[in-house]
Length: 365
Image (cartoon, rainbow, N blue to C red; front, side, top):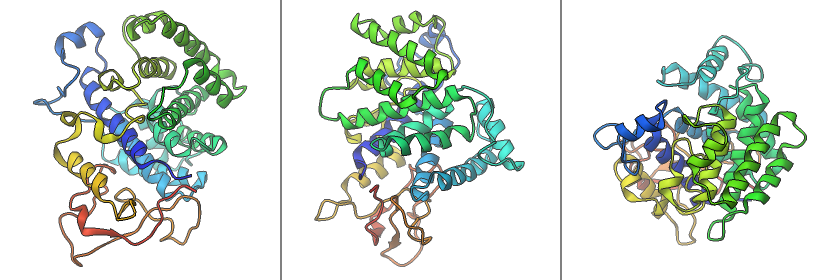
């Protein structure tokens, strides 16, 4: 099955926008955040400009590893581990302790299967939406990829269960585009089936059941957080972050001001990325690249170029499989400043018109 291009770009752009809007409020109480940053509908990081954090960077790394994997979870795990190694070598600021410890272990020789730290932080939840958007129809493959994406940094089963819930929510958000949002009770039942008989998922399912009750009573997101005992704010614990983020999405499925709240993992997947408010993403390199990607269509309606910059083509390596990335080459025949750059993955593709598609790949079969 071929994933919807707009759903994938909307997933990444929505996550990045929500990350950038909420980043200044991280680790602040609700009262202090409201006093220091009263306008949560615009960027407030630096002169009304936003900056995304390691959450968005990890989502982009996950997309690159997914393209390079050829549909093989083992290849995906090894590729993601190497990308995390080099990402950590750049000394990123604000990284969670479990993630940076796992990256250090990878550099010191731990295998990706054993590098994870026993922690239930919410880092894996930020790598999960793209996996759900692309792999959701195949539950077994989705479980395998989410497990690989989680265990490389977090070994606690709670982290895997929370990431699975986020991935499934992103998948359901993508499949209900243009229609009514998924029924909350049905969504919880689907998450229960997806996690199976895992004992660690019991607390998560209880919190999601509370969410269904609060939605029926039309309670606000703040009231739901208080019902979970989070009166002082939502922490980075997986079973705190995921229920509140999913509640905000189910309560406001098409309201971007509510959806792009801090750490909301299911942002903008239900609609076209170009329907996001232009003031949030329509300026700078990201806006130019996204507008080009939306308009670069051939007469058959297919994209003239594809893939993320910096991703390795599975077909170029001679590896067959259900996932292939497109190969591109320059029309002008010489190096230009517009060469797609792999730094930060998804965002920087200037002068996209200098490239044309030479391979009909980039499909999920």
